[in-house]
Image 1 (cartoon, rainbow, N blue to C red):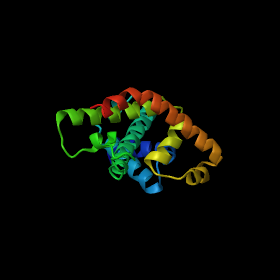
Image 2 (cartoon, rainbow, N blue to C red):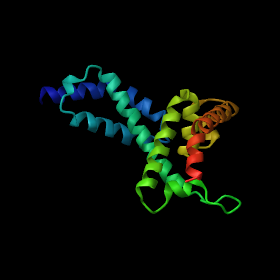
Image 3 (cartoon, one colour):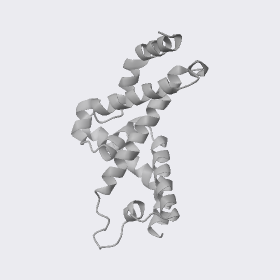
Length: 182
C-alpha cells in the first residue's frame, strides 16, 4: 500500500461520518447522500496534488456542497419539466422559455442565467430558510416529512419557506420580467 493510499484511507476514516451527516442533512434520502459521498471520495481519489490541499476539511465540505447543488439543479430541471406551461388565461408562462425544445443561443443564455440567479439567491438565504425551500420545492418533500426529520414545528417550517419565497421573488423579479418579455 502506497503512502497516498494510506493518506486517502485516513481521510476517509477521519471525515466519513461527519461528511455523510452534512450531505444527508441536505438530501432527500440515504441513497442520494451515499451517492454524493461516493462522488466526493472519487473526486478526492482523482486529485493529483493531494498533498497541496492546505485545509482538507474545507475542501471536502466545499466539494460536498457543490455536489449537492449539482444534484438540486438536475432535480429541479426534472420537476420543472412536469409543469404546465400555460397559466389560467392560456398565456405562455416563463417556464416555456426555460424548457423550450428549440436551442438557440438566446434561450440557452436565458436558461443559464436563470439557474445561476436562482442558486445565487438561494445561497443568500439563512441556512434554515434555504433548506426548507430546497426540501419542499426542489426535493418535493412535504412539510410533515421535513418536520419529522428535523423535529421542527410545521408552522415554523412554513414561515421559513414564506421568508425564502419572499426573498426569491424580490431577488428574481427583474429576471422574471426579462423572461416574460422575451
